[in-house]
Image (cartoon, rainbow, N blue to C red):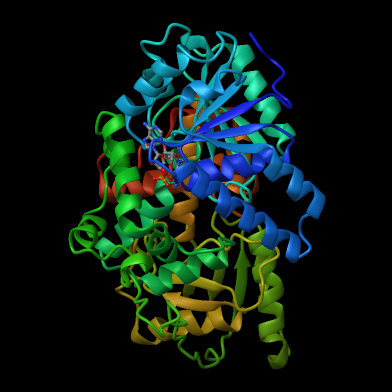
Length: 511
Ligand code: NAD
C-alpha cells in the first residue's frame, strides 16, 4: 500500500465547486492532477476557470507567476476514467449520493492500481457505507475539505470501519503537505464539524420559536461572543435549504435522536422559499440595493438611580471585570463597591436588587430561589478582556418592581455593556449556545469521533469559531456548563439538553 503520496499523480472526479478547489490545492503542491466530470466539457471548463483564478492571484501579487504557470501545466482534463490509470490517489467530489459514489469507486477499482488510495469528499454519507462492496475497502478514506477549499485550512480525515490506519495516516500527512490542518475523525453522522455545529443554529432557532428575541438581537449577542457571523446571518448565507438538509440528515442518521430534532421555524422558511441570500429573503431581506441586515437599533439607557450600597459577588474573571466596571461607574459619586468573594453566585447586588450572571436559571427562578423580587439575569460575557460596549443579553424577573425593569438595563449600560433585553429564557443566548456546543463536543469525544484537540481545531478551522468547545470549557467549568444544561433540561424536558456522560464523568473528577 502506498503511504507517501507527496508529489504522486492525483485524479479528481467531479469538476464542481469542491473538485476544482481540490485540483487547485493539489496542483500548487506539485502534483500532476487529472480532472474528470461526467458532464461533457465540464472538466476543461473548470480548468479554464482555474487558470483565470490563478492569473488573478498573480495579478494581485498573491501568487508567483512561475508557480501558477507550472501548476496549470500539471493539470489535465480527461474525458474517460481509463485515462487516469496511473493515479496513486483519487479524490472524489461528485454528487452527494451513496449509489453514485459506490458505483464510481467500483469502476475505479477496475482502473487504478490496487495500491492507489481512494478518498471521498462526502460531507454527510458514511465512509463505511461507501466502502461496502469494494474489493479493497481498506483503501477508502474520507478526505473532507471545506468550502472554499483553497482558503479553508481544515481537512477531516474520516476513517470508516474498514479503512486501513496507514491509508488514513497517508491522507493526514498529505493534507499537511498541502498546507492544511488535518484532523482524524471517525465516520459518524456529521463527522466533527457538521455535528458539533448543530446547536449554534438550533439554539437560536429554539429561541426564535419561543419569541425570546429577534434575529438581530440573537446575532448581535453571538457576534459579541466572538463569532464572525451570527447564526441568523450565517443560515441566510449558507441557505436555509442546505442548512435544514444537513440538520435533517444528522437527525435521521442518529435514529431520530431528539437532541438533533430540526426546527419548525426553519422548515416553514424552506417551505416558503425563504432560503436566505440566494433567494433574496431569509431572516433578513437582500433585495437589490439592500446591503443585508440593518444595524441593530440600540436603546439609550439613562444613568442608573443613585444607590446606597453596591456589592460585587463571586470570584473569577467575570466578577473581577464587574468590580472594575463598578468602581469606574461609582467613581463620580466618590465611593466604590464592596466585594463579597464567598457568594455562590456572580454579579452585583444594588441595594435590595440583584443582577446575576446566568447559571442557567431564569430570572424568575432566581427571584424565587433568592426570595427577592428585583432580580435580573445577564448572559455570559465570553471574550476576555470584555470589550467596552459589548452586546449582552439580559432578562428581568417578571415579578420585579417597575423601577427595576428599567434599572437593570441602566446598570448593565453603566457597567460598560450594550444591554439587549430578552424574554426570560434559561441560559439566555451565549451561555446556552456555548454550553450546548461543549456538550456536543463532549459526546463526540466520548464516542471516539475525535479527541478534544481535534474538536477544537476542527471548529476553529472548519467554521471559523473564535475558540473550540474544550477551550471554552477550560475558561468556564464543567460544573458551570452542566448547571446550564440541567437548567435547560428542567425547563424544556425531553432529550435535547441531556448532559453528555463525558461531562458528567468530568464533573465527578473535578469535584
Ligand atoms: P457540485 O454540484 O458543485 O459538483 C459536482 C460535480 O460532480 C458536477 O460537476 C457533476 O457534473 C459531477 N458529477 C456528478 N456525478 C458524477 C459522476 N458519477 N461522475 C463524475 N462526475 C459527476 O458539488 P460540490 O458542492 O462540489 O460537492 C461535491 C461533493 O463535495 C459532495 O459530496 C458534497 O457533499 C461535498 N462537499 C461539498 C461542500 C460544499 O460546501 N459545497 C463542502 C464539503 C463537501
